[in-house]
Length: 164
Ligand SMILES: [Cu+2]
Image (cartoon, rainbow, N blue to C red; front, side, top):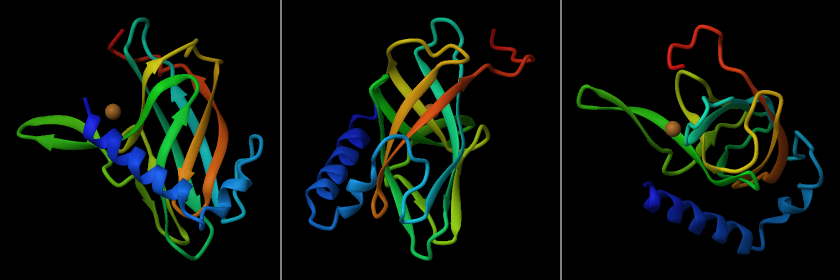
């Protein structure tokens, strides 16, 4: 599923990495949470999936303190075969999700939010533990800010979740 979207994102990332303008890549050292381009990642977390669930969902707020627009092009993790950005959409009477085809646009002096009621991050082909208390490393690739590496905590779902 979503193979087209994945290959599109891969192509975009390849272009970014190959371009001489990808100077910001050098900023991705260690676990910094903020790039010099003014991108800040706030309240990133992953919802611990139920036992045996094939995917997990994650959320974060991306704040752009700079004046120019940026775009989150891709997310990757050594702990997931594939990490996708999804948005919710209506297909007939059914709510479904589909990949954010062009990534997540983060306006200058603005923000983009992956939240439990809208766009979200989806972890496919998970490896290792996604139990509450685990930490998952993520690499975010921005069009202008380059790569930002973060460590994201896994938290338990709300106690009243009916899917158990
Ligand atoms: Cu999804």
